[in-house]
Amino acid sequence: MATNAEVQVSSGYSYPRSEAAVAPRVWSCNEWDPLVEVIVGNPLKARFPHPDKSTHLAEWAGRPFEQIPRGQFPQQVIDETEEDLSEFVRCLEQLHVTVKRPETWPHEKEFSTIFWSTTGYYNYCPRDIMLVIGDHVIETPNVIRGRLQETFAYHALLMEYFKAGAKWYSAPKPMLKDSLFEVDHSYPIPKNDEPVFDAANVLRCGRDILYLVSSTGNELGAQWLQTLLGDAFRVHLCHLNYYGSHIDTSIVALRPGLLLCNPERVTKEMIPPAFRSWKVIYSPTMVGADRFDTTYLKQCIGSSWIDMNLFSVTPKLVVVDRDQIGLIRLLEENDFEVLPLKLRHSRMLAGGFHCVTLDIKREGSMASYCE
Image (cartoon, rainbow, N blue to C red):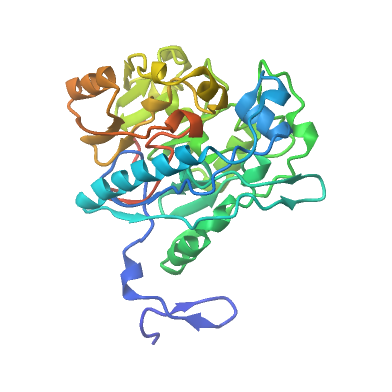
């Protein structure tokens, strides 16, 4: 009999697995169940994504190529962001949440394939590059070339989760050739030459997955995800009045039966039929943009709606930008408690509280919440 929960592999070799691994270390089925463990991003050495066709389409569609910012983000932005993230981490730990951080990575180093060369981007937004569904950790086939090696900063954590029993997958690495991005920037969707999508194109609602078709995710990416997950899940395509990037400044899943939506981008008719019975509340317009000058705004990757990007700690408690008083009141009217915090440079770095987190473990079970 195997001891210490030994696990047999096909070669006949066995390796020890701790008894603690019997309870899943990785388990997250939706956006709202009580949080147990989370990865919070790292802004150190963050850079604007290298200007090329992938970056132009994904982040700056319609903007003259020569206006794409280059190099490292301003040091003040990096320093103040790390201060804000440290406060966020402190609050989560006070709520008895286990918090992990990625390594600091040399994003200034150049790397290449036979088709192109680039530098890195950042590790500020783990939500963009990895998707947790149940006990699966999925590295996604990201659109921006500079993200091809971004998960390397999480490698030690991924190995830790894998050894504890998580199912670790990596999507087929896309070639990201120029031809993928040669589309009309008024409809900036990468061609269906190969599956590409960011993990943040996805919202998880148990066995129903919302997938935004946008500049960071094509329809072939949704097809690949459906194939991986199998018939037990349904991947629902979302076509909104928005193609800019990720889903979580357009639709936020607050709890079963309740969606927060962006009034400029989402109508009830755009929501997939399986979610039509859910209540939809619309976010007030974001405030605070007047604190930025023109020079700052020219460097911003995120939209004016970035602070709609909230993060659920439990089905009752959400982390929200403290300046968004209208949104806070709306949430309180719908029986939520709000933890008001600040990411001063969420707009420049294109990441609010949902973006900068990757929930590794939540309580709860895999369920169906849709028709």
